[in-house]
Length: 164
Image (cartoon, rainbow, N blue to C red; front, side):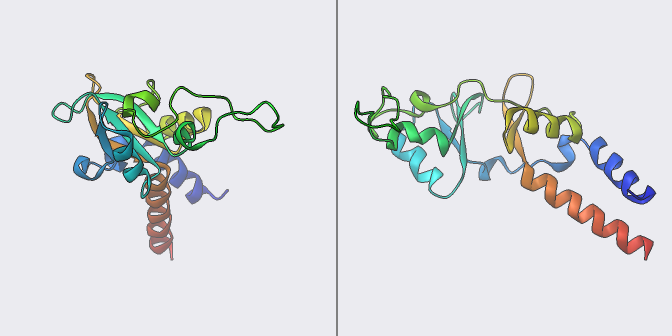
């Protein structure tokens, strides 16, 4: 790796989440924990995840639901004759609430964390997005792998223009 590339990477790792995160909370997919499953499905039709909050006023994070999580709703019940059976789940229809299928312990990030810490969490937990929360678990925004790729690409282009 060239010296300039090493510098770019080390500077990128030091960036704070606050510099990279999506702060448009109004545009982040959020539902209240008592929202009907059909509301969750309507969001997941166009997004890969939805953050679940205790209430929309305080936006205190309660969980997350991903497209993978809705397999509990959509998958057929397990049959005894199937070699590739799917375990039977409590929820088999869309009559439940968001809190019935959400992951209640999402991995989070803080504004003051460095990019390298976010990347380490993403790798360790096999995730591509983290909610950015304050000390009271209020959602302030989100940071995604897409944000990181975009910022790194722009930084690399900017550095190459300066060097030419």
